[in-house]
Image 1 (tube, one colour):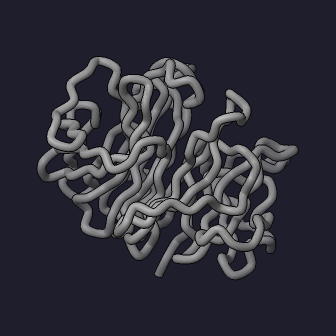
Image 2 (image 1 turned 90 degrees about the horizontal axis):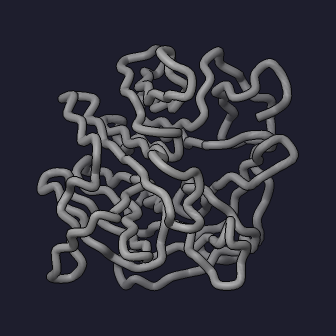
Length: 277
């Protein structure tokens, strides 16, 4: 997001030296994620002003496929294997704060070409009940290593939930209330997410938490500023996330166990993705 010729372009830094000089690519994206040689880039469409596409990229940032978004770009994720890509767009509204919006979330299998273009069509279960409601929204996918299981946010009836999804059975099952934009840890045992906290700014009412999936214990992280982002795990002990900065945003990091304090990781940047071996 630096105010130069590379603004909004993809860039890379050495994960061991994130403050070092960055290599800037020619491709620009509004939202980006990547893993194992697959990238997903949400960007303006070529066909009409005000429309957007999800572009699947290879390891050299060459376009492999292009898919029209239903609205404006919001979230994007690639599975750890690089096989699956997910994206969320706002169909109506442009903020998650008040729940008076609608989203569309899709998952693409880049191997078979299967596109689940609206996860609201999955069966939603809360306990033993199947929830059928016209106000269901799904957003913020994060994938497990098996390329079948995923987690996402589900909103309905004025509440948000962390939900566990299954692509094989096309189901979503609520896990915990008041959890948004989840991010599954590399070891698959914890989920980082933003949680609505009473008393915060109504436009940004969230703090970062980590949930242990084994016993559902919740840990608040040391970041006390309000944020609206889907965190990215740097490793099994730290998470990264974007906060507003003097040039749109900066990437910060904080320990995932609630200890320590936040540190500035990459200035003038958004939408980080950690490329793992």
